[in-house]
Image (cartoon, rainbow, N blue to C red):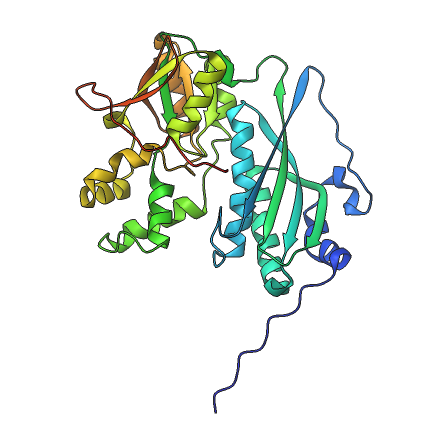
Amino acid sequence: MVKNPAPAEAAPGEFERIRRYFAPLAGPGGLGLTDDAALVDCRAEHRLVVTADAIVAGVHFLPDDPPDLVAKKLLRVNLSDLAAMGARPLYYLLTTALPPALGADWVAAFARGLGEDQRLYGVELLGGDSVSTPGPASLSLTAIGEVAAGAEIRRSGARPGDDLWVSGTIGDAHLGLGILRGGYAQLAAEHRAALIRRFQLPEPRVTLGPALAGVAHAMIDVSDGLLADLGHICETSHVAAVVELGALPLSGAARAAVALEPAGASRLATGGDDYELLFTIAPEAADIVRGLSAGVGVAVTRIGRIEGGDGVRLTDLAGRDIAVERAGYRHF
């Protein structure tokens, strides 16, 4: 006789959820999550750097993504924002709005993922909120870091004549999402798995970002698409930029995908969810950046230049402009 599977344990109430799953993640400043607010210190001659990001099921992650990976992505996209300002991560606050149907098992796995990444990145939970929603699941995290006063790297410092560099590889997450949506069926299984992982589990460059303090003139993390995020640097710095499509660093899996669909190569510069660091430096600082890259074990690649004027151009090997439908993901 076939038995029906046991139903998932119902999710506990708000305070039991906090006590069971999230209080064990709290650092000393979180006061055991028993008070209305947390207490944190700021070292002399340092500034706190604060950022917040939200992710929503069906928009930023797929409803059937593993909950531990959802938790890690939520934390990591915020740590990436800290890295983009050259800040060292310290703490975070978490707000969850979850449908009751997710159940206790989902919440437990989500908390387990947070705990694993807390240990990996050396951050502590300070508090937040936990509410119910008819759906979809909505998760918001506020990350707090620190940077030496005056050492923060902003978007507004790019200068004509700067070279444009990026960390890691570009386009993997875009391709991974495409695979999860049914695309690239001919791609080898190992390539498909690698690209999906890059979408589900970004790697914030928390060591490279602070190392670039005093070297990078401007920096941003690539979340909405390389061209779109570069546009933010150009707008705030009052400059223009040229990106060379052939210079974009691609993983082996991404190269295999492009070989199957060459016409989609330009979309790797607009797809988003890379969470790599995009930064500008003086040309004479190239050797310094290569040394920093080797020291922290994160590859960096020169992909273009900053010019006078405004706007962002994508060019081919001959220097001709490549038309793109849109520079990146639009939230509204």
